[in-house]
Length: 335
Ligand SMILES: Nc1ncnc2c1ncn2[C@@H]1O[C@H](COP(=O)(O)OP(=O)(O)OP(=O)(O)O)[C@@H](O)[C@H]1O
Image (cartoon, rainbow, N blue to C red; front, side, top):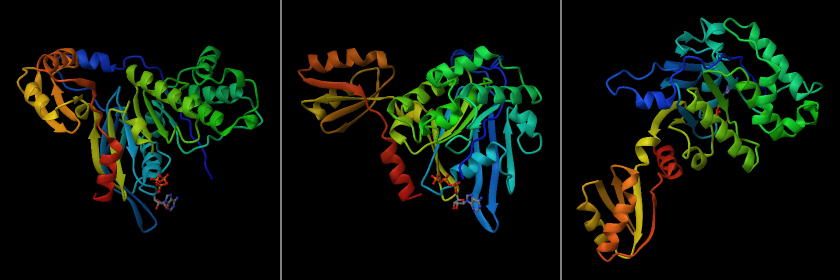
């Protein structure tokens, strides 16, 4: 049966934001990982489910976990959040061992593990969040959560209209959103969501994306599992591909999205023109496009001007987005 675990969290005070990290001295060491998984193994009975998983997620980073059905995503998430015990290896959240120092590690954590969320159906959304808030305040390092914050997260998840209705009257998607509301209630430093967008409508999916992006910008480390690769590639920083219980690849999306494509009358001729420009690092052709890596996006108009001056007709110029779905398919078919 599906259930949910929304784990109390603490305030974001003192967390390094991505903007701060980006403006930091390049010589300074990167922020310490918010989540650190080392040599994780998990067996159910004699069946090995996870094999030697190693990963780190830093403050401000969105890490998406994907993989075929049965690959072990939920098992990994349950083990990382402390709901399942590993057969070997270690998980640390904000430097605390999740399995040996659980309550202090989870004081930093907000999570929705498995959907749909499980709530007291005879109580309203507000009352359920109040119960979560009271539990959050009781954990070591937990902070009290006021009524204003409850109203705020309900509004953020567009549940104000449903706030005083019994959860038993909520739709699947509304329950799912209430699960995310409870996970972010105590402003966690680490947010872990197992398939947060399954069961949501298009606008609901966009809402979760926006909330995750905003939290990451405030310095929260986010791990979420998903099957929606084209959506996730628009806002995740890294994507881990799990297959047969092994982390077979980790894709850094920031590194992959620096190319721009120009749909032109003559891709070969355009490539020649682009290669001569100082701000162009690498050029390939993929008819009807010439694809160029620019040192900075701001050089786009200049590149177009050079192509036009050379007599090329430029019909389209846009980021050459990395196709995570195609990459994933190739990777999972040949791990
Ligand atoms: N409690 C359990 N006892 C025994 N085996 C389990 C248990 N939970 C999961 N498994 C097995 O572990 C494997 C991984 O399951 P898991 O739910 O972690 O995969 P998943 O990647 O999340 O799949 P999906 O995409 O379908 O949600 C499966 O073979 C599953 O049958």
